[in-house]
Image 1 (tube, rainbow, N blue to C red):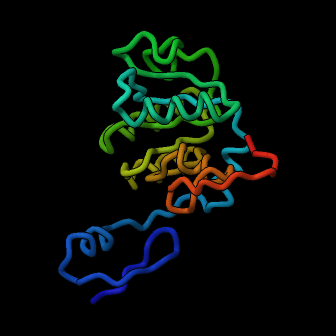
Image 2: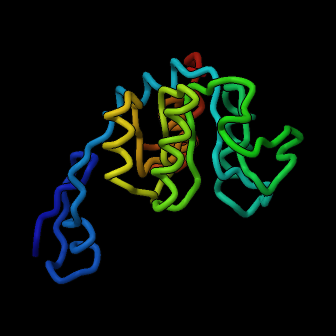
Length: 185
């Protein structure tokens, strides 16, 4: 058995030969913002551009867009060169085509596409690039940070938003908790 340190600070024991142990030992040395810092990013943001947004309800970007439109006060912008409308809103071909500079650029693209998105975000003056759960490009993250971006990777903005606002357990599951506390938007 081998103890593997996870990026969230927890550790677990895995058989040393398991594929997961090998994955966890991969070259992930970059560390993004802490939970408190991510909460700050979400609290300060007024607008979110979803790069790779899809009109297909089966896609995670559609689910996230639906959640954010219903559960947040963010002004949403959708970026996809192959779509014209998502959730009744116009879709822009690129970040450069947006009418505003978004506070958060939320990315649903392959890891190999992340460097170009970082360059595009830097070019328009964005401050934060949030790369969705399961997507990791350490070199692009370091490049973004070197050019002044705050970078969040391998985290779902919907899960993080819901978790910080009482809708989810730490692992992303609905807690079923009904609270009288004022919800953070």
